[in-house]
Length: 131
Image (tube, rainbow, N blue to C red; front, side):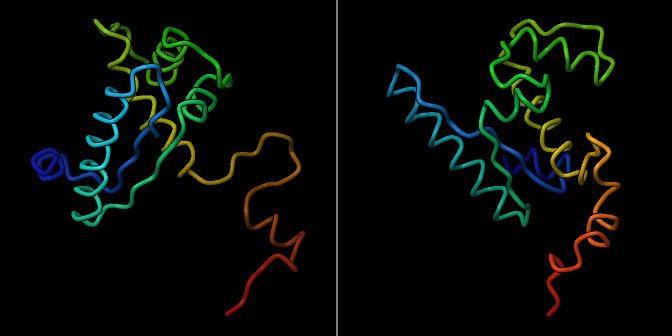
């Protein structure tokens, strides 16, 4: 992790939260690995965001119950990739990164109700906190 951070110089870290599976030993090992990744990122001064698998799938495909193939196909469209990975598990990290980008990019206008934070605050001055 330290070598990856030094080489690529990320500005933040996003990780997928563990989910409970049938194999408890695998879950424990995954939790340890995630703990090391989070601690290393924090030690390097990076902010760490954690997303549930359902949130990642929802963010990428619009369906929190999407399968790996659906996630990969949407990633191909979003990022304009043509090649396919040998193992679809390899797309999980990319999906988390794209999910974090979407979450970190600010408000998305979906219904026409708001034109961003400035417009929202103009319409709702009582929601503005002043020091």
